[in-house]
Length: 107
Image 1: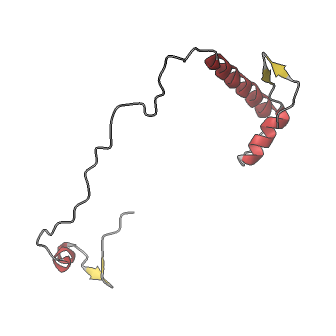
Image 2: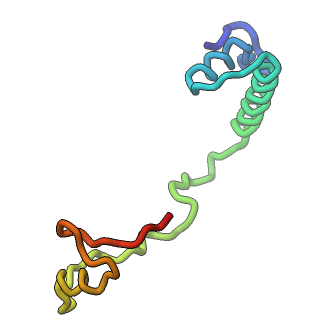
């Protein structure tokens, strides 16, 4: 996909052929102007990543999560509330059909 030898500041130049291959993999149809525009956009994005690669991160510890939050969801616990299935079905407006609760149409 990448053409060796075509470089922009140490990076591989993204050709329109590369963009067309990506578009095909993504099931996108692009005309020539869109292909050229996306090639330029992808090159700018890759140039930005090159800049990020120059940052000294030796003293920075890895961050695996963006926050210090931990999973705060409660464990599922089954409890008996003293109401039977039949009582719940009896509370529905439509009753039941074939052991399923009948509900009013939404749409």
